Image (cartoon, rainbow, N blue to C red; front, side, top):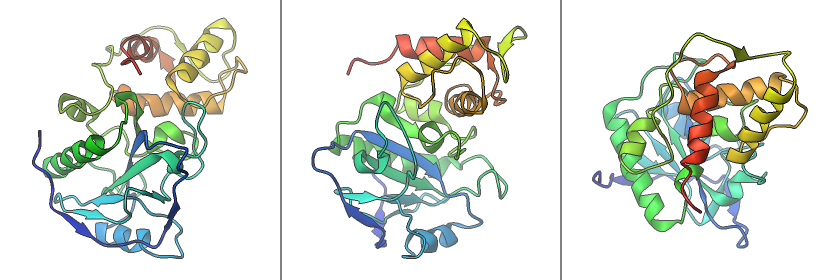
Length: 248
């Protein structure tokens, strides 16, 4: 287990009370998507922004707590997972400094990831969060968000005992489902995504929502190719994840 990070306090005013009827059972990971970590810290603590997270991890591994875990931080926005539409109410949110796709997305430094792993271990020791509810922001808001993106090393976290992950099936040439497709294969694909927790309709047509969910899934679980097409690798990886899902 990684050494616990030294956590500084920098309180954000952007939080409110948790619903006591909703347990904390989601750990949600983000990237900041801003030009600098200090700029992100100021924004997350600005009352005008109306956004926050429980923690912020800088690229050098410095870790700052912005909101106490017993308070509802405002990080998920419009979101959905496994029937829940208020992810903020039942999650702990970690913002990880990275400029993101808009400002020069890049790999996460090793020291930063070590700090994230140590922070996650602490959070998981305090809350009964199942491995398959350690999620990306893009998982719960696929039409709006891309973070923490395909460079985030979910495999490294899983090796450290965090999250639900398995080696993705290799990308190979062959048939794939994409925009405009319809029929039983698309309906089954959408049903499998719903079974895992993603918010996706039952229309049986491969539209923008399905493409967004496929991209979100690929960023988290099959990052070698993020194109929004459900190829054999994507479909098989999803089926294997469902089959290997830990018992609740």
